[in-house]
Amino acid sequence: MMNPLIKDDLEETSTEKKTFQVTDVSSASWAMRKLKASADQDKEFKKAAQEQIDSINAWLKRKLEANADSREYLEGLLTDYLFEQRKKDPKFRVDTPYGMVSTRKSPAGVNWSDNKVLESLEKQGMDNFIRTKKEPDKAKIKKEFKFTEGGKYVNEDGQIIEGATPKESTTKVTFHFNETRVSL
Picture (cartoon, rainbow, N blue to C red):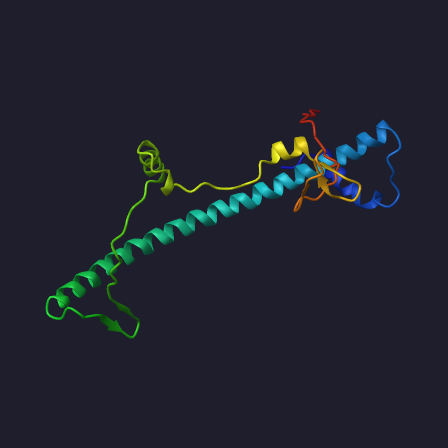
């Protein structure tokens, strides 16, 4: 249930949009109270929506689990039938108007445990089987290179790095609300 003061604040906001201006601490406090009321209302909306989402997801999970059990059972029956028929005809496929059941072989290969493989290669000195990733050391570059007025990234020796462009700093306004409890 929404706090009556917050509800009142939200209702007042729409009528005062055109005429209100922040001119002092008192009007800034009023504006922050309105912002907080709006943020609190957003939280209520999200909470109500999340409750519905959770309920729907629980229903969906139950339905999908029921279907999965049924699907698993039917797939098992069809698999048994397929392999029973394969004893008579090695190329047999179950072919119905609703779909087909067949098999597909995957080639033999290697299951990799990258960390163990790397460790083993390093221990045995087989560095030729290890790839190294090339990437710029941006921290070092920032220390030694500066942008010129023309936008070139240059070091003291006059070497220029292509592919680096200046990025302007930005200022973002943030609003922090104090969690206050008003009791009447």
